[in-house]
Image (cartoon, rainbow, N blue to C red; front, side, top):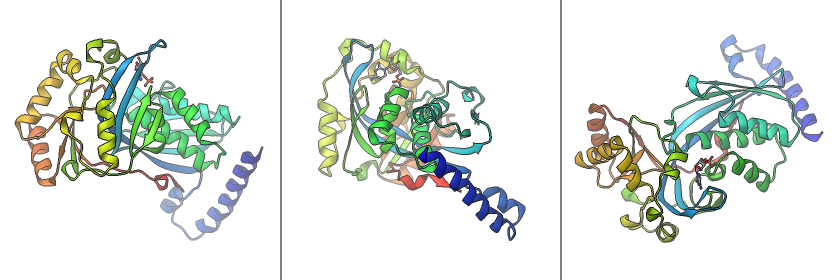
Amino acid sequence: MHWTNDLIFLCMLDKYLISMHNARMSHAQRARTSSDVCFVRAYAKINLTLDVLGRRADGYHDLATVMQTVDLYDTICLTATEDSQVQLACTKPELSNGDNLVVQAAHLVRQRLAIRQGVLIELHKHIPMAAGLGGGSSDAAAVILALQQWWRLHLSHSDLLDMATSLGSDVPFFLTGGLALCEGRGERVTALAPYWPRSMRWLLLLKPAISISTAAVFRNLPASDYSDDTHSRAVSRALNAGQTPQLEDLHNSFERSVLGRYPEVARAKGDLLQVGAPFVRLSGTGPTLFAPFSELANAQKVQEQLQSQGYEVYLSRAIHPKMVDVNVY
Ligand code: C5P
């Protein structure tokens, strides 16, 4: 197979180059210099809008949502192994199992191209889990993209999209990230012009100390909270035209029911507003809330006050990831 020959050739070439280098390098340097290793970052997202349009016959819901990647990220290290296994070591032990989407993503890529090369996935989590920030989905997309680049795989955009969609509704967005309108289950991704309003330059992400199951939030959403796609379209139009969207269009269909069902989230939103956040919205199905700020000093002051109250708060900003985030050593 073409790719296999490529890979063997690369490994041979790498071994030759490494042995040349090693003669002149310390042991510590040698350990870091191997192209059998690939690092990639997986960024979180926030939902600027999230319109749930209605329930579909297949049990999923049709959505219109404007998503933006932010610079809170997990780090993934892929190492080639001698066997033909996919193994995972994660800084959160509860995620170190075969159900993790990164393991499923690696299996999917290997199955699609009948690849037997083994891989160890080391996953350094920074993005809070089950938080509405897309961490698991982003990790999965990052593994697909990293394997494609590292192993020089011939995968078309539709191959990538198929695999991503089968892993989860948010995964296709993370194949490109940046700013996008996502429709259907979430898999119909339309990139928007990379404009971000000055008034939202800094983002505080507050993660209340609970985890929320996405499926449960969808299940508990009353039809009276469904909306049409007006908000998401208005925000997409404004951003594409380089204009700041209207605050009332930053709508999340889940916010009313999540605040009603989870008092910790309602309390956190109240506390954010109380200490000076000008605007607060739920991200995805929650429980994370985001608050935009135009000035770093204000964002930092609010962050410090909330941290002193015991809240988990991240100071972040919108980011447009590039393929260079994959580093092959
Ligand atoms: O696609 P994903 O596996 O991330 O979705 C998790 C759960 O969220 C689904 O099993 C479904 O219950 C719900 N969901 C939905 N409609 C969507 C996305 C997710 O009902 N568009």
